[in-house]
Length: 390
Length: 146
Image 1 (cartoon, rainbow over the protein chains, first blue to last red):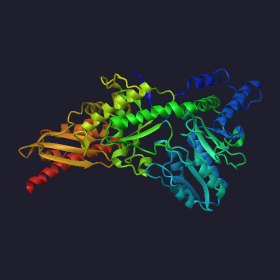
Image 2 (cartoon, chains in turn red, brown):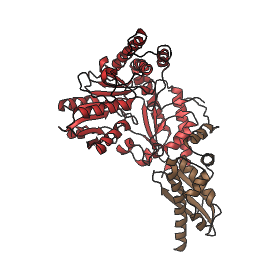
Image 3 (cartoon, rainbow over the protein chains, first blue to last red):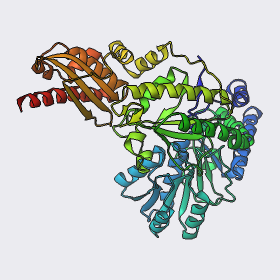
Image 4 (cartoon, one colour):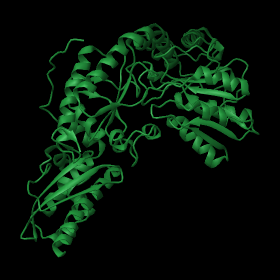
């Protein structure tokens, strides 16, 4: 059965070009880039090349790029470094729709290290309450950490404006740009962030490689203390193969950015509009305009998300769900709850996240499958009678 | 974008079966989920009761009761996951033909045994299936004594 993969905010296919770029360094060229011989140095040169390509994606300088093991490590490194830089400041700010990599670390810092945490709310469209954010920034605030784009709804935060405000107030600003990379333009010369996290496996590189951008001149405390690698900012022998893959993936992401914003957006909009037209009682979560071009979070009343996923699996369709049953806890997605999405809709929410590998035919396949799946599930729902929500 | 006819693969549930198995559902639980043999409603049911679970899954139970004593038939309508559906279907097999009082003695452990296994995070689904059933029986009995 053909797989229709629309779960790209969870992870992506490693691009063929990325695999091709990596393979020689998994086999023949296994040298340590730190070694004082030509065999190791040729790997060092390739890493330098990769660092430049990553820098080019976000318009950074190559020395501002630090390779890590994943997005979570990048987020943790940035946040710990910021609070170490200002040991006397005991207040940190984030939003209430962050990825667990940031949300759970903030909660940990609040519980275990006595930090006062502000979780800035979002409105029903997932838009950040920036008035609240700016009001809560004080002289005691060490850091503001906010995601560039939400992984569940795709809603974008006004990172450029927030970066200006934090700069004016002398507060460090970190952004988790894991979902934004390759989907919106990121220019750190224009958007004055101090630190920014990226993850390889969201942009067609392998899992296990991340990046932390650290603005030139920023005082930084390493999270992993060890050797001199990454100019002392991240100890540990480099994951050479994945770094090289990440470089290629960033080069491709830059090249494909216009495609994601035209062809992929068109596919997403087609899928969204067809579902809204052909399936009654469903609604899109999140602002329709301030949103990633590849993401569609859509809630179907009177059904449950995990059941939808199970039945979609029969058609080879991969997506994800915001229901309580899928979350592994008794609560549905914290993002949808923070937005005030009604429970009946959140419980039946499915996220489709596309990539440039998707086709119009695949969208038609999803639409037909979903019409059938929702009809079957509603036929056994206590909330659905005679084609209507009761 | 031009609409196209897409052939849908609905004939095989092998992938679904494997996924459920990998997630920790035992074969009897998977069978209950896939067959859904007691899903739906009963016309002229003697009792209809509804309960919402801690996760938000919702069940409506329809009871057909013979001579105010014996559970002749049971059907569920469910907005819920595979855990909820398999647990409810298994519960019906345990109470059909039993007296109301015997059915009230059926507990989560009996249903779990009938399913053989479901993932730990789905154990609350069993509670919902049993509680909904018991609620139906209790409400029926209350109505009889009023």
